[in-house]
Length: 248
Image (cartoon, rainbow, N blue to C red):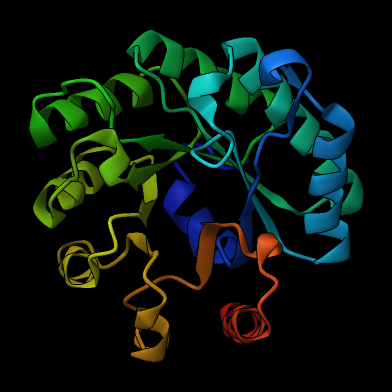
């Protein structure tokens, strides 16, 4: 786990390769229960069978909005338990997005105590008064925790940070070391890199790899949270293999 003080140095060496964003296998009446055996099998498959070096937990694919805080905590704990039994060095990334800052703080502190390596905070889904409000949100969490932090900049939040706003958060919150740019706007990611060249940027639009952005250092050598383990199409599988080899 990286502390806030060494987050940026840690990220340079640790955030590499393919990270698998884990879904939540629901079961039972109305899908109100979690199939823990299926979840454990998924974690083992991603780490042991596929050999991927990172996991991304309790985020959008996990449908975090459908989970209680206790369920989110347990999902992270199981991912750490199963993932680290398969690979002691697997990097565990936790998303602690929540409607309330206190809930986000509770989840972030739990991730820190449970042994996650880094926490990503999605741009708050509530009205946060733009980039200034998101900055205040990050300051609130960072002041009360001691773990590496990342941004998750997604249109599903209702507000997408501008490159200048993302760079300001990076400049003013030392624990912030990485960002998942989920808006599929490569030129904005390129500008963010220019404004904050040491920030680890993952642009979700795969065209940037064909454009040579990885070789040029514009995007980092990691796909922080993908669902590549779902891919069946042979051409898509080949693309993931190529990207994976480039990222290692």
